[in-house]
Image (cartoon, rainbow, N blue to C red; front, side, top):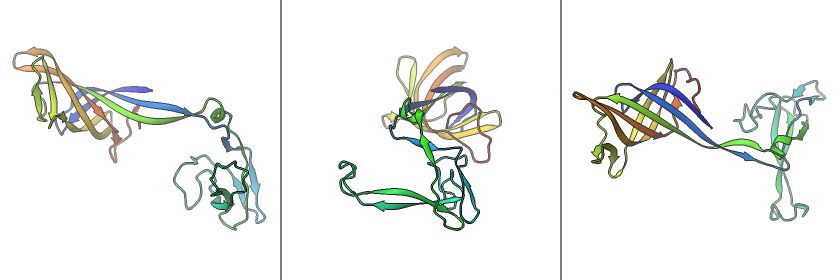
Length: 222
């Protein structure tokens, strides 16, 4: 899954050069035969008149005042269940923890209703397993001073102790800005005119993240 944007890029605090930025991600579909999901039709009023229903939110998100983001009116906790052998040895005799819920105000026990997640059980839920960024920068004149090494074949390798040089990046597009690091690949000299030389270099790595206080870049992966 790729997304490409046009931007202005600075390498190691250099001037800004025109660049193409490609955000790539690998996605794996995870299948679970027992997967369930919240029932959007479920609602409950406990014995003290407190209303409960599922809310929009990630089940994997950070707790919100001790509660799941998808059940903001409930407190989730776990009860340990000893092994009774019905699992066929899966728990290796250690038992398991069973989730329970209670009202966050009065403590009444409440059991939310979950239904089969057919997508997760069949095609699987897409999960991003890795992300990478490739920044292709073009410019005229001297390169930033980051350990250039002539290869003798029209290219230059930017290296540091035999390893590709690691550099800082600033990526601007519109009002947004991303910052991060990357490894510099070979430099391709594409055109010479008088004392100026046009060059192109690809910097790979990531992640590039939004600079604090700057708007997010449209089309940029996270």
